[in-house]
Figure 1 (cartoon, rainbow, N blue to C red):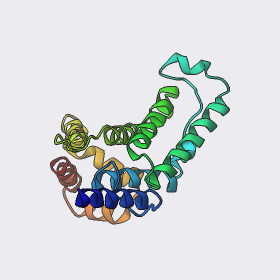
Figure 2 (figure 1 turned 180 degrees about the horizontal axis):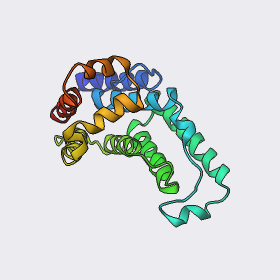
Figure 3 (figure 1 turned 30 degrees about the horizontal axis):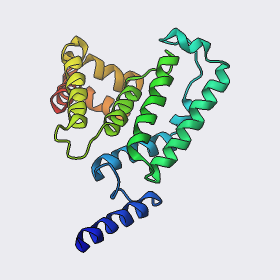
Length: 207
């Protein structure tokens, strides 16, 4: 009995220490790898200014958002909520709940504005949502399946696109849009589209 109480005290102490240390990813309701993923996503949103791009309600997918008051106030509320929950997650406070709320905020932003919708944001919201749904002892790796589906879909999309298979898409991207001089010089020494086709098929195979 004494040993059990001691073990419980240790776990409580670890959880309390983790709750105020943003560098700790252990001792919470989430496994280390999932919490680390959630924190990295938060840092990416904060450091790249993505949180500041959360939208007002304009051309929403769901008409209900048009009736939620001032567009500016709606935007400021999303931004403030994101910052508050993001800091809470970094400090390991109710990490599962934070993940679910972050997913909800991004989803609300996308549903309220067609201009804000992006595949990358949808994927990020899904990762936070799945992290929030994690239950101790869960054996089905839903987050891994989500990543598998993402890359499989990306590869299949390219495989079904004739411009990707021919190398034309990659050629236009690197030569005409990015204007990469080294790549342009290399292609001038090789048969037409040979290098672009090589990189196109390499991308498909890797994905």
